[in-house]
Length: 313
Image (cartoon, rainbow, N blue to C red; front, side, top):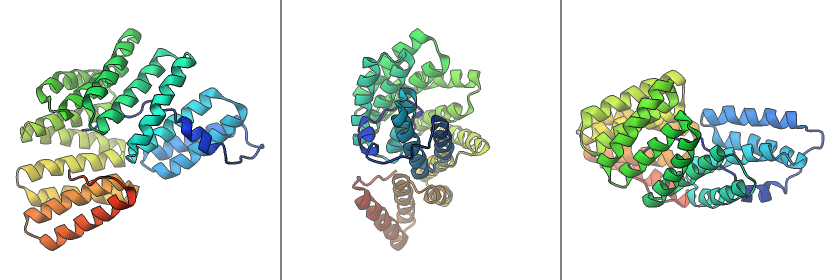
């Protein structure tokens, strides 16, 4: 299940770590903004490690000038990168501290709602769905008060996704459909893609494969048009899962291998693990045990290096 993850994240511990680095006094806040914008561009295309280095440069400059806004923006994006690479426990710790700081410093309600949503996402990612829904609904309450349609739709999407992940599939559908309706009305193409993907996940889980495939393919078409490599890889993976479910293994293998190719280029270990496991599963179904074993062994090796559990789909 895919969640919308452009929310604000403040990593307090990152401040402590980065403060130990020196930054030239010749740098100005204009330079910090330039570094930040470069990081944003790299993050957009899935180049997370490079993006993080630019955010850290920007952060150190803003810390020297005590620019709270600049510090917050950079910590936000560094936090997102931690979540993208699967460091959820660390991200959760930072996000909770972030929320406390926002409340203490009277940040705008929208900013607090964004942090609540991020914490919900982390709980969702580690399987604590009840906690996730609690934070998402608190964010939704704030966003309805602000009356921002995009944020409301984002909250609805995330609540629906959490319900689906928890096994409440039928309960998820109205939330996701309402969110997608708003995304289409706003012509927010990247969000439309996410909404389509999440509805596809529900229908795949309900074994309504033709509907799921149609939704995934529409999402993939949007992502190709937007040139978003990580999202393209996700859609290809999900299409492959559908083909696996209906025993069309050759089509599944093609989708998984195309997804893996992109993920290797982006160098996102957790996503690479997922693709390797899925390819291994297809080879196993085709009776090609040696190829399956090779995929599983590479997946396990990466998992041990990252100290994360093996993921199979």
